[in-house]
Length: 214
Image (cartoon, rainbow, N blue to C red; front, side, top):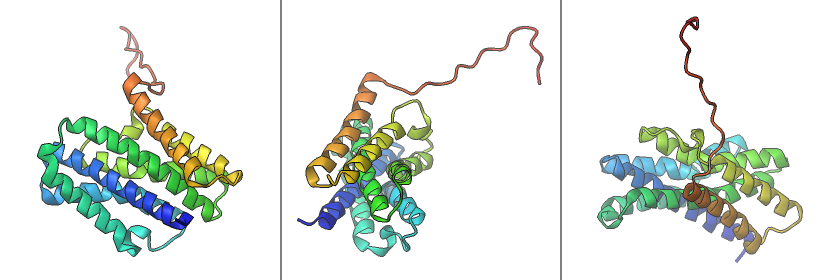
């Protein structure tokens, strides 16, 4: 299997798991068939579209290659019809989201590096590719985006992007090291959820009696 084929399969797998994540969130919000399909489409392809626009690849693969849109649509519709068999939707959404985060971090960073983007920019593009779909999903389902909350989300993607850049610089871009980078992101995200790790949050001091109001 060539590297390009492996990256395509990883990209389509990421599309499928993010579509399932988006569709599951939409089902939990009791959206109709079109709503479930649309949220799944945005969750699956939003990050990739953002990535392609940033590296000036137009039209984005989501529109240029029918396999991306077809994968997202078929997965979202499958979740809609099979959702009675999916127990504990929240757990399903979180696990699928972590898997999509991991896959899109790796493929997004590699694509940026292949487009000759410098290391720092490639790390940021990889992170944006990973979090873009989840951001769109949360906004469409009226949730505060995960990336803006205390949970370790974007930080996990950034850590994976940095590892991919290091592997790329040392010419370690085979399936095993790249899989290890994806496992790092996936594991870090799930451990953070399990142990309730979070980034610091500013503590607001309640106003004292006599403080002036502005």
